[in-house]
Length: 126
Image 1 (cartoon, one colour):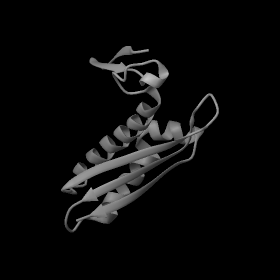
Image 2: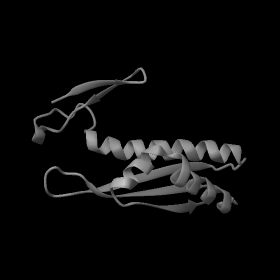
Image 3: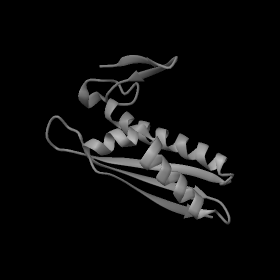
Image 4: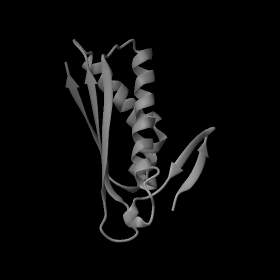
């Protein structure tokens, strides 16, 4: 059940768990869609915040999707939570960076949004 892939010169192994006949040697394909969405928008935002001269102590994301019960099992919704950590954060610029990523730059989010509900929210921590 394991497959090896090469992406931009990087090796990646995909597999499934024992219940699906695999050995759990790598991630399953569907969750990689969620990782791709988070990675795409995260890189956008990091770049935009740097250009805006906004410093944050930390920036993380959590992404989850709801899988349908019937085959083919697909995501019926995706939710992304951005968390920015730091003191005296410029929330207006952070929110602008997130909006630009979601509305203009992140091709992965744009593609997924055409097929299923895709929502996000921003959280702040000091």
